[in-house]
Image 1 (cartoon, rainbow, N blue to C red):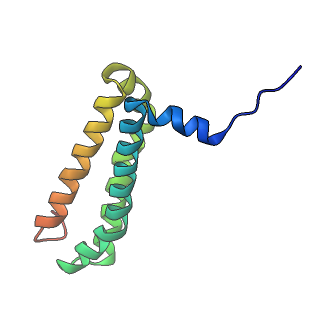
Image 2: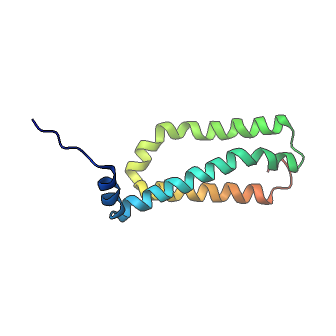
Length: 109
């Protein structure tokens, strides 16, 4: 049997013609970048408004507790709403978190 070799450039060319795939990868990139910014700078912001290490730990705990159930509900939620809606909801959640950190005046906001 003869094996057909795949060329990475051919795959990228095919991918570049699929607008749904490009939007998907763009949204995943934006969500990943947003996550990296929040995870790195949230604690700096909490410190700026007078937060302590204890406040930062509580923030991390609440964030983890809120995210843990999503491991179980993400599949059914994606099936019910669709990938696009789940990605948009994720972006909206990051917008809300960014705004919260931008306007917070106290570590518990």
